[in-house]
Image (cartoon, rainbow, N blue to C red; front, side):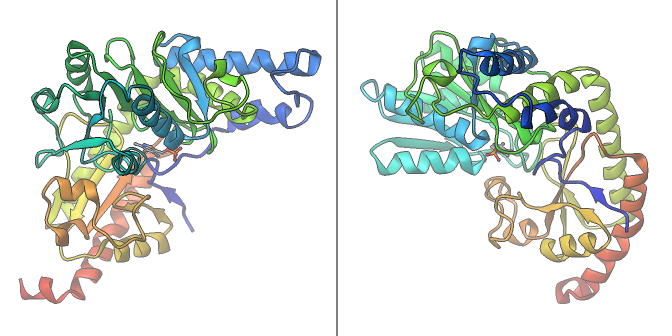
Length: 387
Ligand SMILES: *Cc1c(COP(=O)(O)O)cnc(C)c1O
């Protein structure tokens, strides 16, 4: 059977060149990078290179890059780190209703220990008004956390403007940039962020490695206390293989990034147009232009997303219903609900997220099987038959 992967926002396959590159670190290069002897030194050189590759990908200095255990850890470190270190200055945090659970649930936890959180609403396109951020700022506001790219809709949020507002009010600004990395150019300076989260497995590196960018001079509380690794900001013997893979993947992606993303954008357009031509009662969710090149979020009315996902899976096509994080829960996506999309429509929504491995043929095949599947599922829907 054909296997077509259209779920790159959930995770990505590790690039073959990256797999090759890290192989020696399972054998000959086994040292602890903190060791002073030859075994440690050899590894340290490669580990430091990896940090430089990640830094240059986002226009940061290598000292501003902290390797973590995952994107979720980076979000936790940023938000709790600011909350705990700024407690004497205030207890108010501003975020949005459409953040990843790693941000939302961290904020909800902080609410249980005395912090107050404002969850800003979004409009029907899933966009947020920078001015709403300004209006939400109070004397006690210590942190604003707004994601760059939404994992479900692919929307890009106006973080440059929000960052400028944060700076104006002397409030620290964190952005979850996990979905933006590799898909659009990132410059932490021009985007006015103080903290930014990244994850290896969304950019063709392995799972279990993340990065937190911490602007030079900013001192926040640690999440993991212990040894002196990562400049004393994240304890624990380094995930050498993960970090080196992350660096290598960034180095490879940074070549021809614009061309590759243009290609993927073209594929996404073709897929969208193909679906809209062949199938009626399909709704496009998200902003038309402020968006990632690879993500499509579509509601198929009178269809249950889980059934659609399973039918596509039987044809070898991997997509996701809602976000991978909430699928299986049966709950409508919090992102779509925040956009005021009716619950029934949410429950018929799938996300198709493209990536480097996808070709025109993948889309032709998808377009050849999708209309029949949707028609079959709709034939079973009493609501559709009445129409
Ligand atoms: C995947 C993802 C995360 C979490 O990253 P993990 O490495 O899986 O913990 C956080 N934020 C966004 C936007 C994501 O897409």
